[in-house]
Amino acid sequence: MAYKAEYIWIDGTEPTARLRSKTKILADGAELPIWGFDGSSTNQAPGDNSDCVLRPAFSCPDPIRGGDDVLVMCEVLLTDMSPHPTNTRALLSSVAERYAGQEPLFGIEQEYTFFKDGRPHGFPPGGFPAPQGFYYCGVGADEVYGREVVEAHLDACLEAGLSLSGINAEVMPGQWEFQVGPLSPLEVSDQLWIARWLLYRIAEEFDIAVTLDPKPVKGDWNGAGAHTNFSTNAMRESYEAVITACEALGKKASEHVENYGSDIEHRLTGMHETAPWHEFSYGVSNRGASVRIPWQVEVEQKGYIEDRRPNANMDPYVVTRLITDTVCTALA
Ligand code: ADP
Ligand code: MN
Ligand code: MN
Ligand code: MN
Image 1 (tube, rainbow, N blue to C red):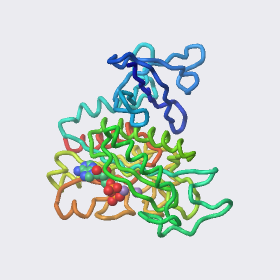
Image 2: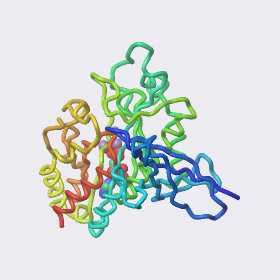
Image 3: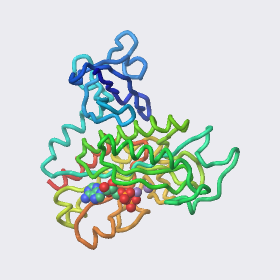
């Protein structure tokens, strides 16, 4: 029987790209071909030369349609088959290949916020809920909003074969997190983009919208980040390498922060478990530092670090490339 392939790609919306997808029907057993789309409708091409190319990069079972149907994460190419300027995956590929010998691993904590009727899910019309304090990892109808979507999303990701490592309710009502990894730079990024697509798609069924806005509510409410946990084989063996990694990130702090997601200065204020965006710091157990060394890493004298700066709306192809490049160069 014919099967359905959902081709998913990243568009050219600025400052934060969005996901797009469309369905291709393929003959039973047929391989995934390259395909095309109208780049003039996605901010990726002018109308008089509108064709862009989709090249399958990663595919997995489609947990929504089931059967033999698949989800396909694509790279966008120009018609001469070179990477489109918006194709951040192509840049990551070459960096990941260069440093593959150091076996970099990433675990990304994706935070996000549900919106219902134009306000964060759980916020009353025209006002605010009780202040933050009991929502994080909470339980009960007065503290938790959207769990049915979160559970459906988790099941879908696992059915798709994605390496989720956990989920939790976050500090602001309607705000949640899932974690992907630890995986190699390309794997974690492909899987995170597919997991994001599944989140939007499944929330659709509940008439709920999802935003990766890093500061969805101004004022005394937590923002949404994408803490990026990272290690290399040397860091997994020695604390000295862990410290070298932190120092290397400090030397390139501004280049990293500028590429960790739009509006980062609104989230990294120095309040709400963040360090100010213009100052770099690292420390053991410190959730007010740019980079945290988990306490057990200090105890065991080896392990990984948590870069707490990336925004929820970051591009994992960009963030994992910068961290791999900066740290692996220093450890080479
Ligand atoms: P937090 O305490 O900051 O909320 P989480 O449990 O949400 O931490 O996320 C920690 C992440 O770190 C997980 O995705 C996990 O897979 C990842 N991780 C664990 N060990 C490593 C490692 N050695 N290298 C990279 N990532 C790791
Ligand atoms: Mn977490
Ligand atoms: Mn979190
Ligand atoms: Mn974290």
